[in-house]
Amino acid sequence: MEFDPRVLETLLALDDTTLWSTVRRLAEKNGITLPPGSPPAAEMQRLRDSLSRKSAADVKEAARILREVQAAQKKQ
Image (cartoon, rainbow, N blue to C red; front, side, top):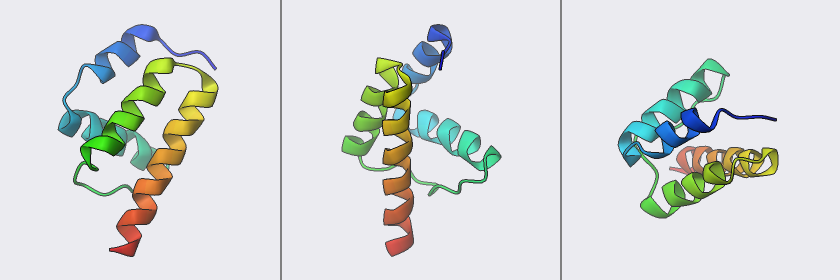
């Protein structure tokens, strides 16, 4: 899986609130509902770290992080 490095750099340069809003919109377009508020800073950093590595495996890790955030929301 190839990713446009310029797009990833742009996303990673966003503040947490804006990045999370963007991730939520992309997820919703694919039928995934994520909580409106940004996750804790540690979770956002994990997401940023996985996206910054730019490999398909790391994108799968980012998806796993999003599933964890989604599951945590359902428990609340």
